[in-house]
Image (tube, rainbow, N blue to C red; front, side):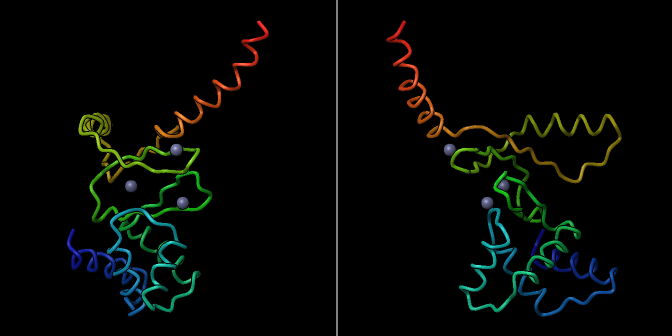
Length: 161
Ligand SMILES: [Zn+2]
Ligand SMILES: [Zn+2]
Ligand SMILES: [Zn+2]
């Protein structure tokens, strides 16, 4: 979707709710669409303030919620204790590998998985808007670290045997 068509979608959504597309909403939409990756409210707030935009956290939070309702953003949970957002209007479908140790998030794409999901939803006559898988585990670095730790921990026991 282009910037103009996203803006049109948002304007239409707001009009249906009797709300106006204010300058503030336009600014927030602009910043949201400039993000190429996922972001939390605080990350976006910090970024906007750095660019000299005076916006409160509560206002930003409300606007992000409204963009989710308008199906321009999706909420994603990385198990960080705060919500992340991603712009489905501009991003290609992808899934997330989430390391629960260092909190790293790796984006992955699988054409064959997309085909399976499509076939699954088709068979139920279910209209698919979007999907996203959150896959939890340990990244390469953390898995190697944990391996080292467990080797050290098991050594003393081995000596006793
Ligand atoms: Zn986070
Ligand atoms: Zn990790
Ligand atoms: Zn992502």
